[in-house]
Image (cartoon, rainbow, N blue to C red; front, side, top):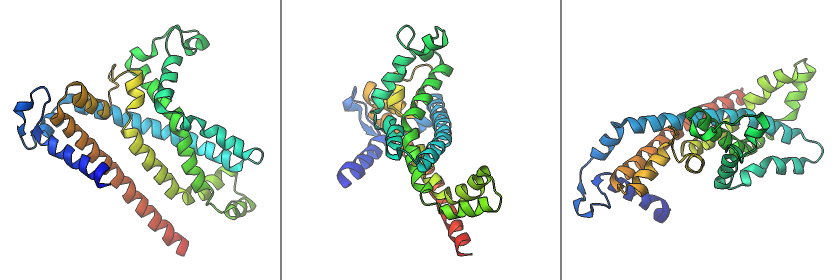
Length: 272
């Protein structure tokens, strides 16, 4: 852990406090927080941050709804349960780059099947709105099975007797789901949202393959990549990396505090 985690993080923080540009190696010097000031005063950082947050919120929200539906199907499947679960989990087993290339090909005019299906001739990946749609659709298709798997684990812990008792008392299926199942799954739902939110915030592969960050689809990870590897500005790039790390910590703290409060409340209700 020290070799592959602590040292890289420490070295990134060290570089972020220096003017370190590989094009001018002799000009390297300590400048304190100037790199952070430069990044935070840049409109590009805030634009990319808003794009990243939009992709994260929309994709994770859709994945939660579809993932819950798939978890219910996998949980209640009586015939071929193993086959159903394996089929649903196939997209998650595909490498992200391959999935991004497949969706890019599908939406490419002249070669993809999407335009031929709907009788259009639209260049989906050349406009902001349609590019965001393809990126989010790819993320949802690729990672919804992971969300479904986590929700399935939580769903399996809900006692069937509670649902049966509620139905005996006259509750409908929707009331059983909303009043019984969901409250008992809040911990699992928050864990699933935490994992996927952290992963979605660091989205890189899909955007890099499909648009390269064009059409205002650049994420903060793409921004850091461009500074570090394309512009060779290690100082600014490291500052962006540290800011991404801080954003991830903030998201984690928000979810963990919510999860802790929720679990404490659940334990109290169970005790009562």
